[in-house]
Image 1: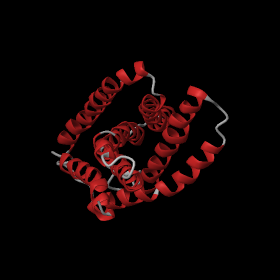
Image 2: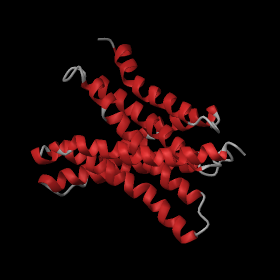
Image 3: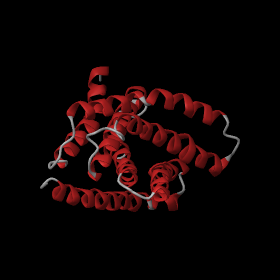
Image 4: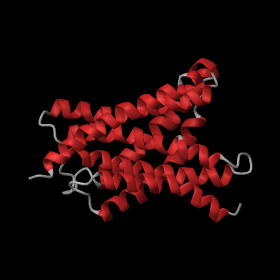
Length: 230
C-alpha cells in the first residue's frame, strides 16, 4: 500500500469527526477560518510535544508499572493535553467568537482532532509493516478518544470563560487540564500495562467516556439552542 493511501486512511477519522462537530454546532456556528486554524495548529502542536515527550521519557527513573504509569499519565497524558489546550488558549479563548459555552468544546475538539490526525499519520505510516490494520484500530479508538478528552477540556474551559467568581474560574481552568490528563492517562495505562483485569475494564471505560462527555456536550448544546434564539 503506497504512502498516499496510508495518509488518506490516517486523516479520514479526524476529518469526519470535525465535520460532524461542525454540524452539531447548528445554532451559532463558529468561523470556519478559526476552526481550520485550530485544527492546523493542533497538528503543529505535535512538534513540541514530541520533544517534550522524549525529554520526559529520558528522565523516567521508574520500573515496572510505575514506569508505565509515568509514560501514560505524564509523558503522554500531561504533555499532549497541555499542548492541545495551549492552542485553544492562545488562538480561541479570548476570541470574539467565543460567546457561548458550546464553543469551548468545539474549539478544544478541533485542536485535539488536528493533533490526533498528525499523530495518526505518523503511527500509520511508520507502523504499517508491523500491523497493516493500525489505521483502523486507531481510527476506531485513539482518534475518538482524543475528541472525548477534548470535550471534557472544553467543558471546563467554557465554565471558566463564563464564570464571575475568580476562585472558581481558577479551579475550572485547572480541571480543564487535569481531568483530560487523567482520562488520557487511564486510557493509555490500561492498554500499555497488559494487566488482564484492567483490559477487561477497557471497553466499560471507553463507554463511560462516551456517556459522560456526550452528556456534557448535550448540556451545552441545549444551552446553545436557547442562546441561538436571541
